[in-house]
Picture 1: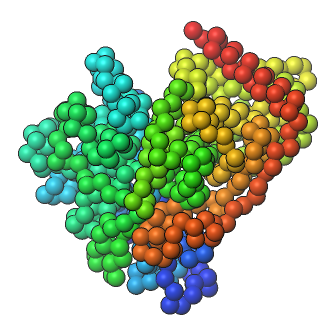
Picture 2: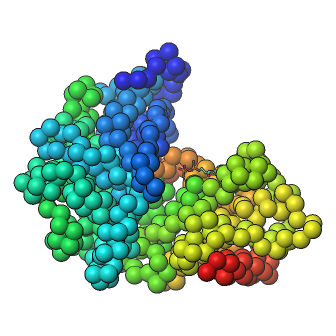
Length: 514
Ligand code: ADP
């Protein structure tokens, strides 16, 4: 294990209460893996993280080494115990949140992966997807899985491995292979191969899972020629996923919480009721709206997914994403070189009292929901001789709020729900200008999470509920510390003018390139 004891901050001991117990949350992300220790008041008392590598072996291909993911995850689990002085005898339970859709296939006997993990961003299966579209499967897939037929989801990645790795198809048919998303890969290995399972939220991202019957779907499996024997058992997100083996943690705590990262964050925000909605402002934006027991069919290209699977009940969600959000700020820094640090953008934007009619539409790789125009390209509209760096920085900041407005507005229309407030997290949610502007546009309060770690907290909540560490959702909601709240202050006329200007600029991106 590659952590350095000399670098550990043992002062973390001061935060812990002797004798009390804690929850460990694992956050297995795309570019780093982390382990956090959470106390009963939701406070994160220690954490450790380690970057993991991503490789791009061909254009549009994305791979990761499953062994590196596993070894790094185990390393940070050990590191956080040393750091905090909280060892496995005081860990009441472990929760896992993970990058979704990424596909690992391994040999049942040896436990060795037969190919690298194929990452969620990987586009290599586009030809398989085109074949499925031509064969007329799109509607059936949407009906059963809630998803849009796309290489993003795991199913076509599994098929690619079976079709392209020598001997894989025969081995799969002989029942010798196991598939898992990253949660399953971790659970299987952390429990010493005794538990082969995933949870409903991760299963709902594979494009093989029927979100109505809550089971793997034979028609989808037949469509892609994937044997059922290579699929894990699907369990509730809060419940029994076995015990960590003594080789990994001496006192073998139980794993009792599992959810895909966006769903973990959704739970971490306590979005328990129909209509509750969160938006994560990171490189892109990820929005989830709780639609209760209804699978909402979107007219705006949003997907339906399992949002929460806890307490013997599934809550569905509408999910929308924006490709370029915080990345626009990175673009200002790295390509235009007009800022040096993302943190300065709020003050620069606020130095102007108005956007002076200037709009930046970051359709760098087309327009997503609700427009769905892959050929659209970005634009800065409304420049005058008076426009300067601040004008462009403000337009870039505003673009995150407008894009989120459009998706949230579409969600409201699809679900027939009126948003009452928006819970936010992610690095760009710390930008006070953007959050105020978002609140003004939507006309509802925008509420920051106090902790930036809502994903890890959600995994901890799920694990803690299963072992009685927290009693119920009510207790979680009461404990849950909310951060700053932005109340709408915008003048209705200004808001209408801003939105009209934005939509005019969006329309222009669609005619720039045919
Ligand atoms: P991810 O998990 O997607 O990597 P983060 O939540 O760490 O993302 O967010 C990183 C993104 O947020 C970067 O694209 C960065 O440009 C943007 N960002 C960070 N701080 C700010 C800020 N104060 N204002 C606007 N954007 C920001």
